[in-house]
Amino acid sequence: MYIYNVTINIEESVHQTWLEWMKSEHIPAMLDTGKFSKALMTRVQIEEEMGGVTYSVQYRTDSKATLEKYYAEDAENLRAQSRPFEGKFVAFRTELEVICEQ
Image 1 (spheres, rainbow, N blue to C red):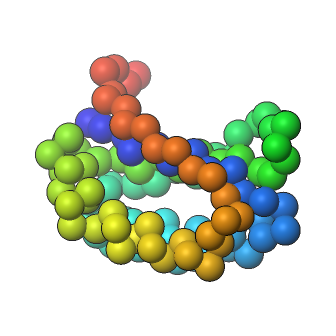
Image 2 (image 1 turned 90 degrees about the vertical axis):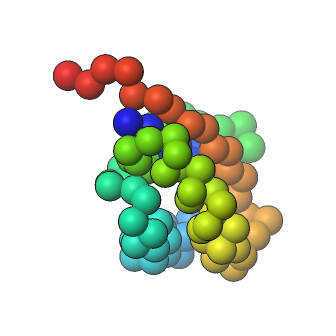
Image 3 (image 1 turned 30 degrees about the vertical axis):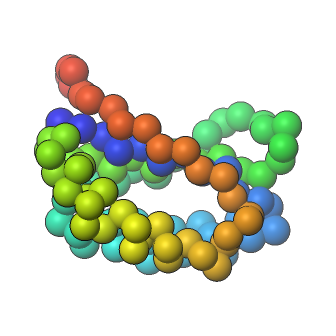
């Protein structure tokens, strides 16, 4: 099991619009690729010096190979959909391998 984690800091000025877009459009589009079994969106409980609001979205997938297929087939198009918020957020992505789940 793998988790594709995207951490995003979004400016306050577009925060509400972005949050609704994430919940109603972007996360469903990610799941519609068929490469992720579920998504968990959390608000990071930290006050950033740069301001904004920080979130972590964790997408579960069955394997590294499936995640690589996402990168090759879907990532560019799905990332491009965030253009209306360009310059208003910073994001970084990490891959997590699940070792144990209890």
